[in-house]
Structure formats: structure tokens, C-alpha cells
Length: 79
Image (cartoon, rainbow, N blue to C red; front, side):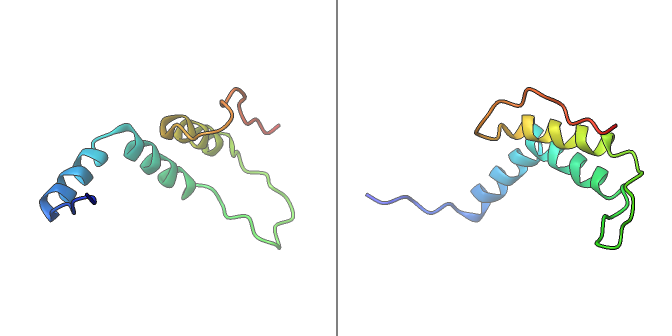
């Protein structure tokens, strides 16, 4: 027997549950932090901004999403 299709109400409920979870919060925090750094383009001569808050948010998002693969042991640090 094949999978049953979900109704629109079930889909909406699943989406609301996902929005209440840690994954959505981590993604939203990453997107908000991504908008605070200056974009790096081909003409950029020097990267002098502090990217550490952005990288910390990226690291936290990867941990919260439980990305398969190696365990995240290190931190990204720019000096």
C-alpha cells in the first residue's frame, strides 16, 4: 500500500510544529546574522570585518540541524 497524502491541515500543523522548534530558530538566527556582515565580492581587497559572530552562528546552526558527517569539534577562528 502506498503512502497516504497529507491534508492541508496536517501539513500546516507540521509546519507550525517545525517553526516552534530549535531548527527554525537556528536558521532564522543565521539568516539575521548573515545580513549584518559586508558582502565579499571579487573587488574586495581586504577582509577586515569581524566575522567571528557570523561563524559562531553558523557553527551553532550546524549543531542544531544535526548535519550528518563528522562531528563538529573545532571552532572557526579568524585572527
